[in-house]
Amino acid sequence: MKIVVTNDDGPHSPLLETLVRGLEAVGNEVVVVVPERPRSAAGLARTYHKPLRVRKLGGYYVVNGFPADAVFLALKLIVPDAELVISGVNVGENIGIEATYGSGTVGAALQAGVLGVPSIAASMEVGGDVDFMMKVVEGAVASARAGLDGVLAVSINIPSVWKGGVYCVRKLARAVYRERLYEGVDPRGEKYYWRWGPRRSEFEPDTDAYYFYYMRGVTVLGLSESGVASVENFGRKLGQLIGAVQVDC
Image (cartoon, rainbow, N blue to C red):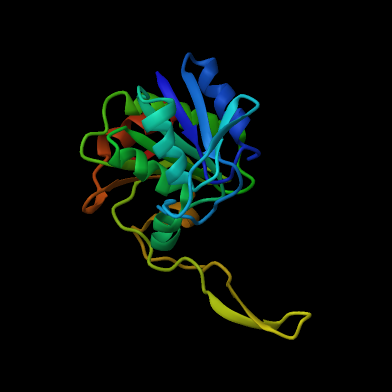
């Protein structure tokens, strides 16, 4: 399969080379097209106010724009015959409404879906097992071969400690963090503001946050023009391939 790999962490992401080598090892042709620097939380941002440029950096293509720009250039210019786009693997999970729709990782996958190419966004909690990550990604690629009709993208989140479950998400958590606005004064005497807060300890049952943080499961979310979409067949196949003991799809 000809696969475009992109991300929102740039060419120096610690998980990028592992992902590429793992995909190539099982017979895929992989072309990497990524932003030239980290673009976390870029969502579906796109560049219209300046020219886009592409250059080679080692064996990768790097773009002076956002993750969605990288995918647009990949599919319109560099690899127009790509069969699948994998965005990630993101360093850190993308759980809840804000993280899902604000994620550059997910945004890149959605851009691919809009352009008609099946896509998977993969994110892993910090401290996760890289070998298990590759098992999940390879299982997702195999599951995607059966088709992803009716969805623009599938977002997969991998916990740092897996308790054996795969859960198809039907509802996103509204708020994952208890954020507040911090105010400070910089060395020049000007005020600045910082948005931050700890993660909540309790989540509404049957949300992606509940399955991820409480059940410690791999979550599978289908995204379409109307919001959350059914990906039950994909989720069941993925669960089978990674040896899940519980599959809620």
